[in-house]
Image (cartoon, rainbow over the protein chains, first blue to last red):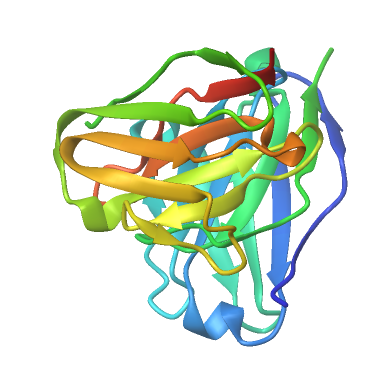
Length: 117
Length: 107
């Protein structure tokens, strides 16, 4: 069974950056794309962006353009999502999921990012 | 940019009843790029349907998806207690986005 293991919860000050990691099991890193989705408290799902590690060119939702970077580290088979200049409304659970340009068929456990002064 | 609008926002039904959830796209989409997810409280979403009508592995056959163009439907033929949850539609083509969700609650 595919697993995507994410890094732990983060608490950040407004204006700082947060970086969340996602390590897929098996051959997922070399075979599939990885997408990032977030969910603010009590709200719905919001697409952030994604990457196919083998190609290395990320895609970002327009809402996050200029503030998010998604990259893949082939030495550790890990995908990262970094969000800069965070604000209180960036407080959310951030998920990585297997799939890009396709259905998201396996999800990480989620990483709670809290932005608070 | 494609916008997905789900209706109703909340569906109040009893176990054993049929649930019909709607997802409407702001422009015509390729049904190959339309999926549905179930999310229970405190859990990550789980893929139910992909390519508008194909069930994901392990999904019971009481779940079915249909539609094309701008109108898509998720149907749960007979609600089981574990089906009360929030459901999201998702377009994963060139303009990737989610609907705002439909909550199916116990009446």
